[in-house]
Amino acid sequence: MPEVPAWKDHFPISWVDDHFVTRREFTKSLVWVSLATVLANVVLAMLGRFRRLWGAEVLPQVQIATMHDLPVGEARVFHYPAAGDPCLLVRLDVDRYVAFGQKCTHLGCPVSYRAADRQLYCPCHQGFFDAADGRVLAGPPSRPLPRVTLERRGEELWAIGKA
Amino acid sequence: MGHRQSLMTPERQLRAQRAQQMSLIYTVMVCLVSLIFVQFLLLTVALEGYLGGRVEVALPTALVSGLCCGAAYWLLRYILVPSRR
Image (tube, rainbow over all chains, first blue to last red):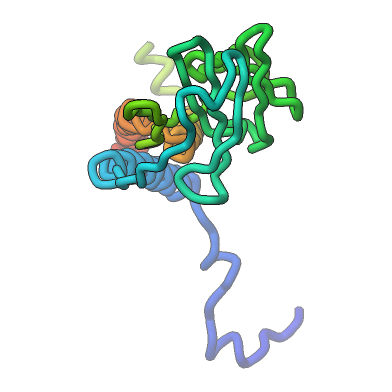
């Protein structure tokens, strides 16, 4: 029979037994995981609410075109609110202008206007948006294009906000 | 039935009781893992909604996740009670 080393008498801890987790303990820890998941969900809900309450930033008001700059059925790129934010102004009818962010909500490719079917089209993954309200018609995007709020001031068109 | 019980030795009784408790623990464990899986799915939906600007999704998912957690705690009762005996 092998002799038990002396250090085992001085340090009588069995790591295997010490690290052993019973099924009961493991099940209890699952409930803690469940609680942590709820907390993460609640934090997200609160962050979302606070962002809605306090996150409404005031955007600049920028003149983007005059009423007769753009022919009916045409579109033009402008930048709003900053220089790195391309948007698309579309003249749907004589008196009807709409504007949307140009980045596709799928992976950020620039969309272009198709006058024949009044749609905004993303060539990267075949995403289609309705040019009237920016909602998704087909393709992988799941969210509508962000809409730029326009205001007519006499003969000028101003961008005053972005939804 | 009484005659049958008398045939059970204390050791067999203990073994049967232990087997019963083990199956209870495994059942509770499987239920908990399923609930946590649902909760992770809900958290993913909430996170995607938050990042995508659809914050209204977060509150219902938090409520359902809370219900799942309540159910998990309720299930835990089943394995805590026998351990106190």
